[in-house]
Image (cartoon, rainbow, N blue to C red; front, side, top):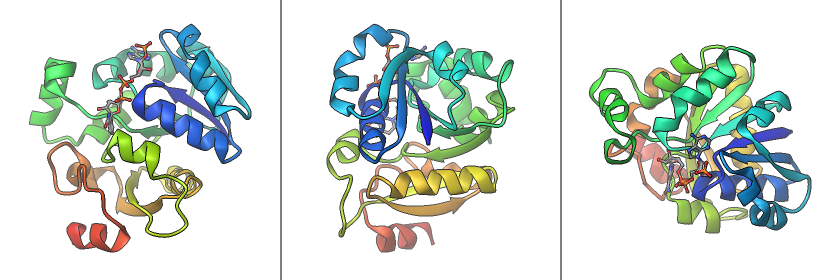
Length: 208
Ligand SMILES: NC(=O)c1ccc[n+]([C@@H]2O[C@H](COP(=O)([O-])OP(=O)(O)OC[C@H]3O[C@@H](n4cnc5c(N)ncnc54)[C@H](OP(=O)(O)O)[C@@H]3O)[C@@H](O)[C@H]2O)c1
C-alpha cells in the first residue's frame, strides 16, 4: 500500500518506519519535511519526505493523522475540498492544555473525537486507531510473534475497517475491533481502554 503519514513525530515517525519495514511505500510529511531526512534514512525501503499538500497530491491509498489535534481543521481543509474516498486513520487525541478551546469543546460535547475527525474529513472513510497506545510501546513492542499488544480500532465502513486491521497486523500487533465511530468513546483520553497496554483477551475483558 502507499501510505501518507501526516505528522511524523513520536507516533507518525514510528508507524511510518514500521510500515516501511513491512514493505509499504511511505510518504512522511509535516510542516517541515526538510527536517525528516533522518526518519527517511531510518525507514529505508520505499519512503520519502514531502509536504502535507504533496502527500495528498500523491494519491496514497491511506493516510495516517498523527498531528496535534489543533492542526486537524486546516489539514481537513486541504483534503476535503480536493480529494475524496481515501481511508484516513486518525491517531490524534484532543488535549485542551496543548490544543486549546477546540479540544475542550470536543471533550465536553456528545461527539467522540473520531466523529469530529470524520465530520471534518467528510469526503473520506475514517477509522480510529493507535491513539490509545503509548508512543514508547508503539516504537518498541511491534513485530512480535507472540505476547502481542492489542491495538483497538474502529471504522466508518468496511473498507476502512479492513485496511486498518491489515495495517495493525502487518506490524505485529493484535487488532481488536471496537465498532463504528459511534462506539469510540471508550478509546478517548481517560476513558476505559485508553493507554491500556494489554493483550487481546485482557482488552476484550475491559471492553465487555
Ligand atoms: N505521544 C503519545 O504517546 C501518543 C500516543 C497516541 C496518540 N497520540 C496522539 O498522536 C498525535 C501526535 O502525537 P505525537 O506524540 O506523535 O506528537 P509529536 O511527536 O509532537 O509529532 C507531531 C508531528 O506533527 C507535525 N505537525 C504539527 N503541526 C502540524 C501541522 N499543522 N501540519 C502538519 N504537521 C504538523 C510535527 O512536525 P512540524 O512541527 O515540523 O510540522 C510532527 O511531525 C497527537 O494528537 C497525540 O495526542 C500521542
